[in-house]
Length: 128
Ligand code: SF4
Image (tube, rainbow, N blue to C red; front, side, top):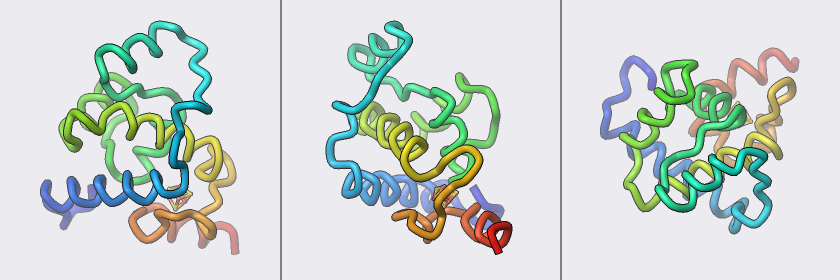
């Protein structure tokens, strides 16, 4: 969340991020490979936002999370999104973290949510 961004604007940005990512990854669930069965159980039964290393990194870069603590990130994301979107949004961030927003080399130039990402400019400057 940038200094000038209101809560409502942040929610709207999160929604647009989800929509763009869902166009790029129409069915991210089939490609997920949860190594921790408990996470899978939580994701499918309780429908919370699963916060793994990808979700943590990507949500921070996107300015949707303000902390490094996965449990707090989960709460922050759940506050931003309608409950029906929690599970899908978590999956989309995992998939985006694997495919585009790499830990070391995020592919900001080809990122479908570059215009919605407050970190893009910084990463692209580093690449020059
Ligand atoms: S613009 Fe770059 S840092 Fe932002 S989400 Fe896309 S790949 Fe990640």
